Image (cartoon, rainbow, N blue to C red):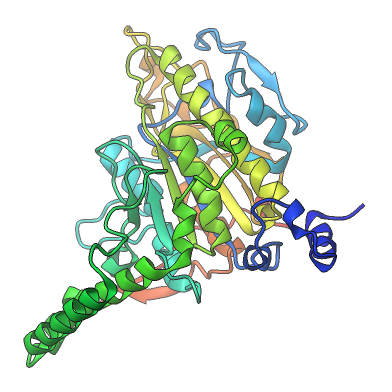
Length: 424
């Protein structure tokens, strides 16, 4: 039995590499566990309900009709709305007991993007920005920190004290052509325009070196021009992907975003985030969560399978998470409210252990129990510990201290790696 990579090498040597669609020689060099790692974050904006996804409790009076589905990972059950993910769970692990003290959307998002609670004295970098700064990808001419999101109101992951150059590059409509990526005039005229711009830039910069450096004007222009000419822009083009594969991911913004995320990994992009809105189900929770599952389930499962088939899974960490969970109890509107005291995430790939189940929440908490010890889940996991684990597995020292612009030393991450998820 050959691995896919070994078979590819044999096929290439025999001159029949065309039998493996989409596998160019350059892409083949970027496969396997030895390649530099990437992170794909599937961001569930609004806060998904753990009881209606990765932590079902059908025996509870708060279940609301949700039943449990056996998965390919022994001992792990998930909600019945995720049948395709049930087949892929053997490749992944589940944390059911994440805890946070931030139950507001804006503050919770900040905490879950950075691993630090909001602080008015400092702007912390997102995990994606840290990875991009600590592990630059030579030869990648497109942004190395990208967020694929549709809709309004989403907070773009920032570079924080590392600098604006590490802010995520936002693609608002995954699958559509990127705007302003093709020059609209002949090459000769474009060259004259750039010469004129250079004259103006040098004139303005005379005696203003520090101010000009702070604007990042030259950096932005250089990177934009390199990106416009780069063949790596093909990662954003889905027309070359088989119709069957596009359909498997889902013909919607999130599905297309997940497919583009895989293509960006092939190009060597360090951190990609794909956003799915619609989990803020204060009313009509069960229909809302079911609708979201219908989008998430095929896209997530196909992404995992696609990465496995292309020998990219062992070098790509995939994380599915939101800013918090939702209350175990059901409110009078048939909804669940914000709940940071025990929520779930799914993580795997990148050499992390698979089939691990961590923690358990109490499904029978009532509204009037919210201030009691009953809300503390079994085996609570702090958010910074999750990110310390990811950074460690991607070869980044999370304990490294950076001197912030106000002269304050801060560690990239304040957590400790979760040994149960790290390879032995």
